[in-house]
Image (cartoon, rainbow, N blue to C red; front, side, top):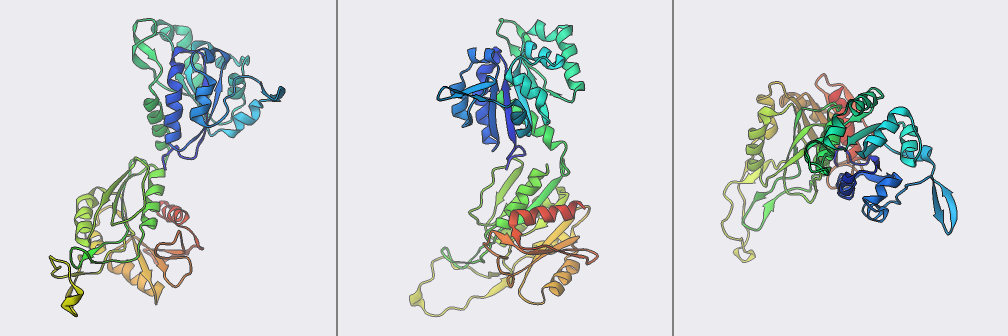
Length: 399
């Protein structure tokens, strides 16, 4: 999920030529998995139609204090609209709208929503070169900033007047980047590199068959999503899985075997701040995989197995400033075995789950975990979704 994912956004559109960009802006916001409601000033409808914006936003567009249903008036409650939003984005914000915001003038629905909203307001100015530079507009923008609003920069380029210079509204992709960077800068893992291993590994028997396990990768992918939502740059090294990633802060490195995963970890481990080894790595591989498919007609066969490289042991031996978390999936003596692994692998913490707990373990959407710290303090969690487990794990790491 994007850092903006799940946010409820009001897009306020005032009457400037840059309003023609707003359908694209709405589409880009929706790609970030946000819910967008559009509020227009009457003047803005000369530049872009409510029909277009309602089509791309999948929500009714509001532009006056009243709407009509079968000729009956319906009050558009500006207080409800303002309290619904997680953020208010006014783009374009014209000189007239900015002046009204500064002075508390309330002569249209958008201004009423702005004056009622409790959420953060982002303002994307749009006006001609000399108008933007005029002392009155610069003074108004500074005043709006003192009110707690976030003022976006303007772009430089060709203007509607034919002049070239500052005053253009930022392009939709630039507005999205600005919003993401704003929220990212206030997150606890901003600037941190997080390495996560996930999923199973497959060890080939022949070109067709392999030794594997039932890991789905769900837990590792949930950890990656939570880390990215906290602002981290995430390297996700994953074995074969059907899970998907949508957050641009997550770089996925698919691997097949334990050796592949070992090499990928070696490449990225030194640069990470936090490493979580949630992958279900095969403990053994076939010493000499067959080059051709084995036939049943060839009769019984014995496979000589050799240990795979111990990825977690490598990470523990080479740990410098990294915070290293391992996983332990046990079927007996769970707590004792997890504590032994915690010490032997030189971990900062280990996450224990058991195949004996219903709803926990492989392939399930839920898990029941215990978080064990280096000092052997144990924090137990109830059965919950793997996403909630991931949140619980990062709460413990950040604590």
